[in-house]
Image (cartoon, rainbow over all chains, first blue to last red; front, side, top):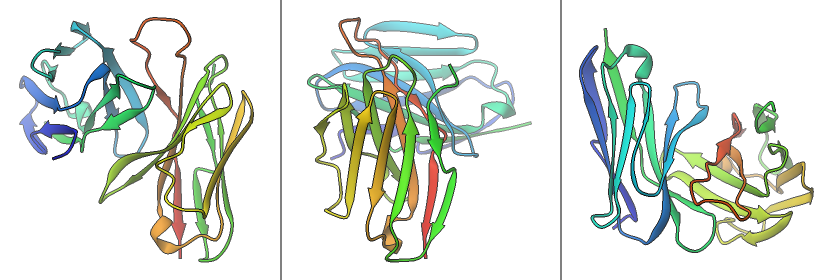
Length: 109
Length: 117
């Protein structure tokens, strides 16, 4: 069993739809990182959170430490949101990250 | 700051040749990570440094891979000799982890796409 799992693996949505991407993990963590990787390959940090909820523009990230689960929500989705979204957890000991397999999102106009 | 800078962006080399990837972390960051991304395995940690000292190199595939960080502003990842299965995108990332909250992001470079033929 992978330490970090994401669902769905692939997601296609129509422009304007509300999108949820889920991340679950099985190890003790100190923080969870949501990353975005565009088709060009660059990786951009979206959120780092260790509890509760964070919001930035149309993006919202939540984490439930007890349930070992995090969600990334995109409101009013747009074709430019099309990317791979990667969940990464920082282990309790050390500064390393363990990555999920990613969720490939396509938003159609 | 210009962010994490990696060079080259693309590298094509023949099997058996030595390859050196370079990374300049964000100034002031004390952690530097080397990751490899492939279609089959996704993102994997190769090695990371804290204050220029290697902390965890358990992800380095084999002796053909070596990494150095001679100072706080420069790191290299070397593959010698290279093999076709080393073809991947190699990312460098840096973060600041000294004595602050746990919410410390890692900032990634643009990656080096390595193709070994």
